[in-house]
Image (cartoon, rainbow, N blue to C red; front, side, top):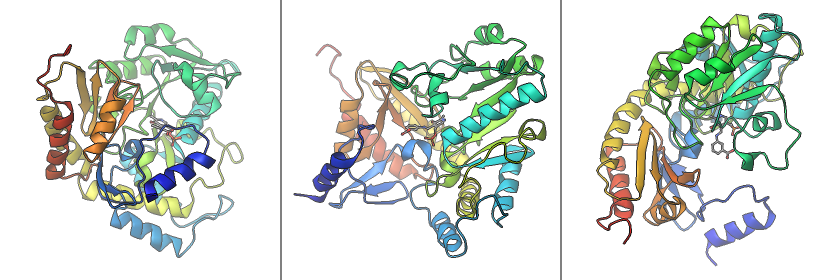
Length: 403
Ligand SMILES: Cc1ncc(COP(=O)(O)O)c(CNc2cccc(C(=O)O)c2)c1O
């Protein structure tokens, strides 16, 4: 039996089945390339859902991990460590915010944001206790905790997990009039993904984010942008909210913040908001650990020094142009920003992802009919051309739709 099958059998035998992976085992990876136990190479067009913007095992980030691992990895927040302040300063400068609160996973950062905006509503906006409302959008994906699942519009994420956390309103994504109507004197915040990832790379109408920002400002409502999947160059700007030159009251960050090497997430906001936390009101065992901070500092340095944001914008425009040359009546829409592209079909996308895997290209369907293309931002034009050639082999057809 080959190693791949043995690994899959072992994984399936003992693991809970909360995922449906493509039948490929990755045992080595570097840059945009991954390798299975038999030595077959694939080009990674998923980047662990945009956690690998800097590419697999980036040498500078791995070195930072190794160097810090030989010093100290965990102190708890009962004491200071010499990496956290460096991380804070770098991320505060990058976001233009006064304060940072470090966590580990995206969902933890989202939960932190929800607690911050609620407490801000009570302490600063003087909303009556337990009456704070948070507005979110249909199609949202902000993580898998019970509270975050509470405001999902996707029933498959919710079945059997009730009772749910109250205090959330759902509006259609991109609908400024719906937002206007949803705001009340008790509204603490409007939280959204500037481009929805799991919903299938959904871009709101031009100007929506700017209008939402202005509406929030006019009503003393905090605008919270979840940039966990869209941040750090993925969409061709440092943050997706930069496409509309909007500086949200709060950024939620994760994934590529750790360079695909170590889980680290964070919330950034000004003192008026993050200042609501007093000692003992929030925390995390691993939050702000020196190993994660050292890795994140290196990951941010790589992003800036290698100009990955510009690369994403330039190569993403090229990629989009090439994808739009593909002729196939089954293609419904090709959309995206930077190297964050969704190719929506009129039919299930999974079989095409499986065919692409056979061609040496790894991608994953989202919401049944959309193929997401999100390679590491370090991809070269030659590697992109290699991918485009194979995507065309699988998708381009001269056959009419009803053939
Ligand atoms: C916009 C956004 N916000 C929050 C999260 C949650 O982050 P964590 O997963 O680190 O808790 C995400 C995560 N995004 C995401 C995308 C696809 C699959 C999965 C998965 O849970 O396997 C997660 C995300 O895309």
